[in-house]
Length: 155
Image (cartoon, rainbow, N blue to C red):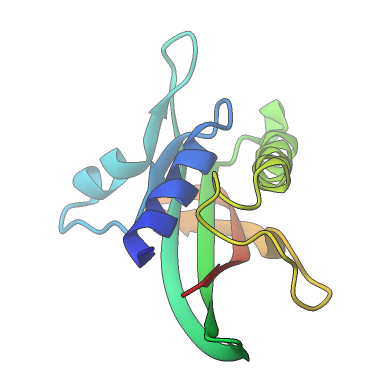
């Protein structure tokens, strides 16, 4: 098992959520605003374009010897999402629905297709919504969410 395998499975899981937008396996940057915006510009049905995207970052790992020759790695992930704010279209509700659809997708597949252990440790399990609110992103007022997830594997 490798970190790259967990990352790829997490990206695939999120990309499978209908209308989720652009999903990146890492924090995207660009020198030019237009190039940066292009990383997060999603084409909606009907052809309209909207900033709607996610980035996944591996922010830590802890390793615990659990006995009988088994070691548990716990990978900590941060998922940040953005969606252009349009008050008249009530986009906050759309954004909340996307976050909940992502959380439901993970609950339906907590082992990421058998790559990770689905055994919860402690009281928290699954994708956690830690923070949300409006931000300026790519020069556009957007909804933003900070989500966290811990995946586990025995090595």
